[in-house]
Amino acid sequence: MIIEPRMRGFICLTAHPDGCAQNVKNQIEYVKSKGKINGAKRVLVIGASTGFGLASRITSAFGCDAATIGVFFEKEPSAGKTATPGWYNSAAFEDEATKAGLYTKSINGDAFSNEVKQQTIDLIKKDLGQIDLVIYSLASPVRMHPTTGVLHRSTLKPIGNTFTNKTVDFHTGVVSDVTIEPATQEDIDNTVVVMGGEDWSMWMNAMKEAGVLADGAMTVAYSYIGPEVTEAVYRKGTIGRAKDHLEATAFDITNDLKAINGKAFVSVNKALVTQASSAIPVVPLYMSLLFKIMKKDGSHEGCIEQMQRLYSDRLYNGCEIPTDEKGRIRIDDWEMRQVYQDEIAELWKSISTETLTENGDLTGYKSDFLNLFGFGFDSVDYSAEANELKMVASIKN
Image (cartoon, rainbow, N blue to C red):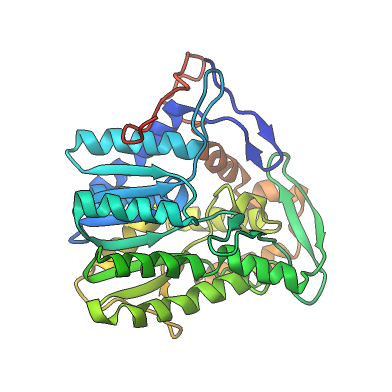
């Protein structure tokens, strides 16, 4: 079928298998160009199909020569209907990893469920024995709690006060004000249940009890802090409470893994275009300004550059892993350079629809967004028929 992007609000309803494959190949080539990393050889990535999780899996495999198991929850294709981009990303990753002689298997299901945890543990026992590194990179808006059976939904709201600030519709480039009402305590609690550290801890406990964590095993989850301009709706809002819980959980997991010399870390990553971040008010406008400044300075990174640097400069640098005063790995260090943040704060005062083209990189933002779904790659002929039924090789139907 001929596949074109079909937009609905802040989401694209279609994905291109060949474009997604090109996106994966580009990331693989970048990692290979940076040389080998003396890192983990058996890696589990929970949330492995898009964004930082996909980049982590690619870096593990093609940077460290690791065997990888990826867990994700993606929609499969059907005749005349495309899969979600994460499905095609995973299919392309498995194809390339297999060509390179690397072990790769994937599990498609609800990572919050006990069933998927057990399925993953059984696969580890059967094929790899134990795991050296667990990457936790889930980004779901809902969670069915495996113990209570209650469906929890996260919300993106400020806490305490109504929030009003500038935002941009990245499809049209129109800058306007957005107002968000404050969260209730129920909103806060639900968001922590979905996006906090409980499920990460449940995964690590299940794996520890099953004996599938190697001595010295490490686990890393991902977080974000961001600038003052977004903190009311993000870091000091409902999501921020969940991130606080996630970061506190790292210390609990490290304590639980003492018997096997294991450690848990949270890596604070850079603001990047993802399906989730594109829907957060204020953030696309902030990123448009940030990208322009960082690209001009030669310091801009995408997901794969961030993860390659995380692995090579932080996790497996041959020395002690550097952390901030709260025990977090700061791979957002370039984004948070004071000179960049000062410039953004000054631009923010007068940014408008008319000045955004000159002062921001909305074109780059929109390109990154399309790339997420496999569109916008010069090497792909989008007028040609594409096979929407592309499957993930290790997943039996």
